[in-house]
Length: 147
Ligand code: NI
Image 1 (cartoon, rainbow, N blue to C red):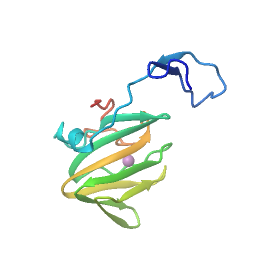
Image 2: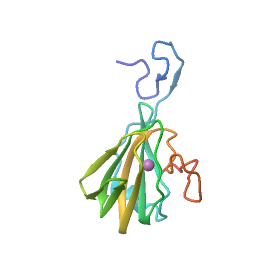
Image 3: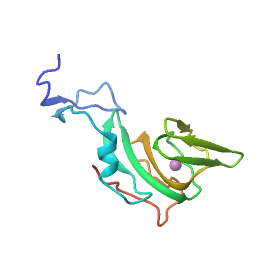
């Protein structure tokens, strides 16, 4: 059992797992309703952070239309469809995704999500991953909000 379980925990370090790092406050463990979280925002192409584990962020995003072509030099990116459907355009093919499907886009692979109607998607990727990857522009969200 972790000392102070429920209040403090040992800080994790992904770069230096052998270091004895100081304790940090622990978030209370609570279930998350995807329906409630998705109901809490309506803007498009603006991912919201709803969870964090092991240096990864769980994000929710709604979108419709075409995104920008981009890739991520260092991050693999997972897309899980919660409601609706969209297609992930790759340079050599297109992958159709509907509710219940997920896709992992490996680092370095150019991709562009496109949705004919609004879709709700969960993203799973390392904290700090930029939504537009190597391309900075009006769609770039440098610091996603937390819900
Ligand atoms: Ni991406």
